[in-house]
Each structure stands twice: as C-alpha cells, then as structure tokens.
Image (cartoon, rainbow, N blue to C red):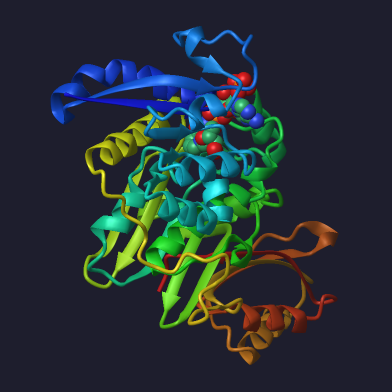
Length: 426
Ligand SMILES: NC(=O)c1ccc[n+]([C@@H]2O[C@H](COP(=O)([O-])OP(=O)(O)OC[C@H]3O[C@@H](n4cnc5c(N)ncnc54)[C@H](OP(=O)(O)O)[C@@H]3O)[C@@H](O)[C@H]2O)c1
C-alpha cells in the first residue's frame, strides 16, 4: 500500500463532500488502487465555523501550512473564485505538487498560467469536476476522443438555469417567480447573475471547446446571453410546435472557423438534450469517427462533484507521469483559428402584426430578400388593439442575414417581439 499525503484548499459544500467521500471510500481505494490517501491539512477562511465530520486539528487559515509542507504531494482546490485560488494553485504546482480542482473560473481564465506552472514544477493539473460535476466530459474529450475530429460540443452545463427553464416549461410560470423559488430551495445563489447571465456556462464552454478543438478558446471570445429575458409565452408557443427551451453552451468547428456561444435556444423535443430536465447536465458531442454521443448526469452537488475530484486524485496518484493538453496553451486564440459572429442556426420569431391583409406577405418577403427561408408560419388569435401574434420558424440562416431581415420589417406593420435560436435541426 502506497501512503499518500494530500492537502485541501477549501472545505465548503464541495470540500466537505470530498473529505466525507474519501473517508467512506478509503478501504475500497486501498483495495482497488493500493493507495492510502490521508488529508493532512485543510485551508479555510473561518476557523471557528462548525464543520460536521471534519477534525478541527486539520484546519488551518495559513496556506503555507499546505504549500510549504514537503510531505504533501497533491493539493485539492475547492475554494472557488479566480483569486486567491489561481495564485495558490500556481504556487503549489511550481513546488511540484499536483493540483486537482473544481474551479471552472480559474481554469477558464488562467489555464495557460496554471499549465506553465505545472510544467515548471513537473506536476499534474486535473479539473474534471470543473465542468458538469460528476459527468466525465473532460476525460472523454481529452482521452477517449483522441482519434476523432470533434466538430460539435453542445451542452446543458448549468443546472440552475436548466431547473428554472424546466419549471417554466412544465408549470408555465414566469421567470421571476421560478427564480425566487429556486433561491428559496438553495438551487440558485442569492446573487444568481453568474448562472442566469450565462457566465458560468461560458467558463465551462471555454474549457470544453478548447479540449474539443485542440486550441485554446479564451473566455472573452464566447458570445454570451442569459435567460433573464425569457418569456413564458415563447416557451409555450415553442412547446406547441414541438420544441423545448434550454440554455445551451455551443461550440462548432468547420475548418479553421469556430463558433462558440451561450444563449437560450429551442431544441426539437426529439433531440436527446430536450429530455434533460431539472438540475441535470448533459453534453452532446459529435466526432467524425464516433458520430453523435451524449453524456448525462448530475452537474453539481457536494457528493457528485466530490466523486469527480476523488477520481482525478486517484488517477493522478496512480499515474505519476503528468499529462498536459497537446495544444499550445496561451492566453489568446490560436492564430490559425477564427471565431465567427455570423454563425448559422434556425430561428424562432414572435411578431405582433397588424390585423390586415398583406402583413404575412410583408414579413415573408423581407425574410426572403435576406436569404432567410421559412419552415413554418403561424398566425394566432388577435389580441385586440395590440395586434395579432405571428410565430415564424425559419430554416437555418446566418445570424447577420436574420438581423438584417428583421431591420427591414416595417415596425408599423409588424413589431418583432422575440427572437430565439433553434438548434439541433438540419
Ligand atoms: N457546489 C457545487 O455543486 C459545485 C459543483 C461543481 C464545481 N464547484 C466548484 O467548486 C468550488 C467550491 O464550491 P463550493 O460550493 O464548495 O464553495 P463554498 O461552499 O463557498 O466553499 C468554499 C470554501 O473555500 C474556503 N475559502 C474561500 N475563500 C477562501 C480564502 N480566501 N482563504 C481560505 N479559504 C477560503 C471557504 O472557507 P470557509 O468555510 O471558512 O468560509 C470554504 O470552505 C468552486 O470553484 C465551484 O465553482 C461547485
């Protein structure tokens, strides 16, 4: 049995789960992997906080008790945030300590700094838990899909927004009401901006698309829209037409052009992502050799996340030679790639039109003049003086063509009230 001594940075939701799961799995890991993993020290902010099941003598508020301890060969980081997490991880790596982290923000923003520190110290850097918690998408992309050219990664990578959109869809309740309920249940943060604004999903997409396309796709290049403006009447209209609304993280590669974006989008109810409900996560991948593939599971929570962290820990301690992504890990986009803002998708449009002849003709003409062809058009019951709702689903078109067509529609004839993209259609 190999004795391994590790340290932890952070003992909150995820950190306490890591400690508990390690205690639970110690005999199994000993039996299967011949490792006896002991946590020597755990960094926290507040030493006086009550922490069930965590021995008080292991806690410290001084990072040097971990980083400066020569016996500690691996550090698990679960404190979160960009700083001081990035600086502490970089220090650990430079001193030759392998780092396992759940921190998507630190990896998305500072991966190049952390990888350089890991190379300098000859240490490993592992981050399976940083994207989709228990779902093994990092290892799938970095190991299992090496013989594929991945052309698409499309996922529901944020459980909070998926819970909110699923509730709005199932119960036809407005966004603000469902958000408040999610906050009361602890499923959304008191400050929900990172989740509902799509920032969390964009960090994760930066990591996923970099691994999928073998080139660093910096976070700043990701187009991001949140779910704050989503209206339940659009969810209802989409549902009637056989679509479900999801916050999608989408990365597509065609030749040397990539499009990377986070926004709400309809998917057909027959698409595998449509049935991913509640706080679950899923990532849909397409490789030229493997075809379509989907990974599904719990994207957050103390034990699911701890499971991914401990798996990385066992892997790192059993494989002393560290692996690094093969691409050049820089802060900027690789010069051979272009990120486009003129991607293609289908569109859902809701317009409020005058109730008189020729209105539908005006809408279809303006769309047609800009190469946007219509898959279906539906005029709904008049809403009195305010006009007639018209729902249009287009075929796939370029984003800029669609925007130009919408500009050309005379607002005195038909006012554009809602535009949502539709993914997962040919
Ligand atoms: N929660 C999830 O389901 C989930 C899922 C996947 C990934 N993650 C990621 O996991 C990480 C941790 O999340 P969490 O939910 O466990 O957070 P959390 O509950 O807020 O825990 C953070 C821990 O870090 C400690 N800490 C924070 N700043 C510190 C500082 N400056 N110095 C010393 N200690 C500090 C805190 O100490 P005190 O206890 O003393 O305050 C606490 O123990 C984040 O990167 C998050 O994105 C979380």
